[in-house]
Image (cartoon, rainbow, N blue to C red):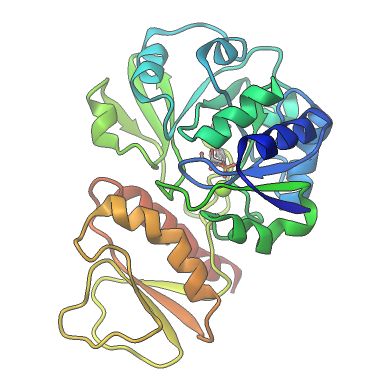
Length: 325
Ligand code: TXA
Ligand code: MG
């Protein structure tokens, strides 16, 4: 594996690796992706192998322009087009009826495909230079913390990837919102970088996530397991944190009022902004997870703006222990 600075020359080299069937981790505005040529089923299979990801969890296909997208889905629909126009490039993934060019392995046998145009220059160039759409899940091991820096990828998956393109920290820091346009409604399958109130400006929304109680798969959003995004340490969510205990890491939303914080504390957004909090979420969790502590206590985030997506990630991160232990 080689970590390369994301300059034009290196992006071209990485594109050649993609064309030759290899794996490249690359930055997007949300999180780092682990990419392969979406039209090459063998390369796509290597993504699942590297992540140890179950084959029932379908992948997002990344495109760099609308013509590329149009070859990958069927049944043009007006709402999908409006959403693409408004939010692409950006953190919105659209689930649409798939064209026959999409290999089965990408969609886990579903007749829909998830498409996204990332808002990141390196990602867009990589897709352009590869001359093919790129399939990419988040570049972490299955169910572990998502990567928002090249080093996070390197630590979890370094051995298994040909090239990691280092484009610095991701600007948004939380995965895309996944939606399915259906009967003039926007069905939200995963909360993410585009808050639901912005989607509402385009069409009425219906929330279809967050109700999975056990390990059961919801056919609408396969891969949305109740546990996910987990640090190796136990994560507990608390409404209000009253004391700082030893051997414990703390993830505060804002500066706590009557507590003296220590080096095991992280503050997601001193000014109480959920966008800033999302940018810091995974990188602070990676930092806390690497400390000599026994557990992490995360404070509840207000469920507004990106707070909804953040709480979704924290809740899933906290479930791992409930289910496995
Ligand atoms: O921001 C993002 O979306 C990042 C960056 C790399 O683009 N990618 C990402 O991929 O979060 P991943 O694999 O970690 O999550 C993708 C999720 C899957 O778990 C699955 O639930 C959903 O997308 N998905 C993919 N194809 C689908 C389909 N046809 N129908 C419903 N859900 C689908
Ligand atoms: Mg993921």
